[in-house]
Length: 217
Length: 341
Image (tube, rainbow over the protein chains, first blue to last red):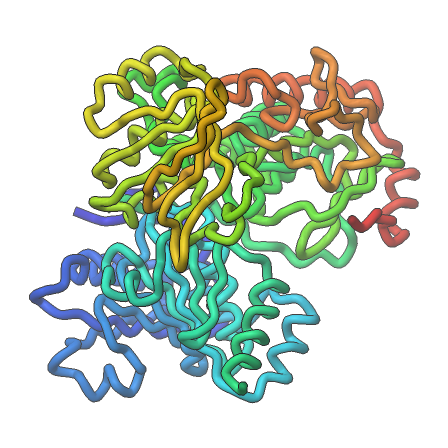
C-alpha cells in the first residue's frame, strides 16, 4: 500500500514542481533491527517518483559502511538530502507526521539553495569560523517541530560550516536520554548548547554564538 | 504511519506589494473557515497560516465534538481537511506569520517575516496561546519537564509520574491522553470540582491512573537538572505540600495573541479583541474571529462559526466600500508605512 494518499501525493508533487537543480536522496537502511527502515525506504521511493529532478540511492548501513562514514551517518534509518553539494542536511528516523513537511522543504531548499534567512542571519553565518552541528529532536505529532527543523536545515544549506539533523526522538531513545530530551522541539548545538521550543532565527543564532563561545573557555 | 503535510503554496516573488481583497491572519479553524467562505465569494484571498497551520487544533489528539465526525477526528487531520477545503475554493495560503500591521489607512498593510501585503479588508484570527502559571521554576524547566503539549511530549513520560494543572476541557482531555504514557497523572485544580465537560469528567474519574489534588494551586516547580516535583498550597487550609513528579503539563486557559494589534484594535482588559455581533472591530474593514475574540467558549466549532460570520461580513463590506483603483495605485507605489512592534 502506498504511504502517500492521492491528495497528499498531489500536494507534494505541486510543492516539488519546477525544482531548478537535481537533488539526491541518499538513504541508509538495514533489513533487521530497524523498526522504521522499511517505511522510510518506501516513503523516499514515493517522493523520488514525484520529480524528475530527484534521484534516490539506497545503501545498506553495514555493507556500505564506507559510504555511511563518508556521509557521516551513524544511525538508521537515515536520509541525506544532497544538492549541488552535500550541505549536511540529514533526517534520522522517519520523517512522518508533521515532519513530512520538513522533508519537502529540505528537498526544495537543497535544489534552489534559497532560504528564508534574514540579512542578519547570512551575516552571522559568513562570520562563522568553527563547525556547528545542530540536532533537532522531534516527535511526529508535534506541530511546532517542523519550524525548528526547517530553520536548522536552512542554516546548513546557507553555510558550509553548519550541518543539521532531524532526530526522531521516539526512535532513538538512548539519544533522548543522553541529551535530556523531555520536550520537543529541542535543538542541541555542538553537544553542549541547547534551545527549547520552536525558537525564532535570532534566538537560535544567539544560542549558537553562546555555544561556540562557551567551547572556547 | 500518518503523513501530515502542510498545504504549501510556494512563495511567489512579488515586484510590488501585492493587493488582496481580503487577508486573513491566522490559520486555525476560524481563519480556515473564513478562507473557505471568502474563496466561495470569489474574493482574492490570502490566508497567513502562521508557523503551525491548524493552530491549537493541531495539537489536540482527538476532536470529538465537531459535527459530521461521529467517531471523532484527529485534530491534525481536521486541520488538514479544512486547509484542503480552503485551497479548493482558491484562497492562497502561506506558512508565514504576520509581524506587524498598519490599519490606519486603507488598503491595510500586513507585514510578515518575508514581505508585506496590502488588503482591502482584514480578518484577524490569530488565536490564543497557553497561559502559563508564572511561578518560580516554570520558565527554568520549560522543555525539561514543563510542557503545554501532551501530544508532542507525552512519549517522554512513559512509566513516569506527571502533574496536570487545570480543571477545564483541555486539562482533563490531555490528562487522559497522558495516561497512555505515564503511570500516574495527578490533576491539580484550584477548586473542588471540575469545569470540564461532563463526558471528560466521567472518563477521568473512571481512569485508575488519574488522581486529583483538589483546592490546590501550584506555587513552585521544583527540580535540579529536570523537574522533580511541584510545591502546592491548599487554598482552603493554606497548607503547603510537595507532589513528586517528573513532568508538569499546564492547561489553565489561554492568552489571546494580540501583540501586533496593540494601539490599533480595541481590546478588553484581558487582551481579547472587542467586536460586535457582526465580528466588526473598531476599525472599519477589519474583522475578527476565533479565540482571539472569544474568552468564553474557545471551541473549534465556535471558532469556525465566527470565521464564517467574519468572512460574510467582509464580503458585504467590500461590496459597500470597494477601494477605488486610484487610491489603490497610489498606495501601491509608496512603500508601506508599517508600525514595527
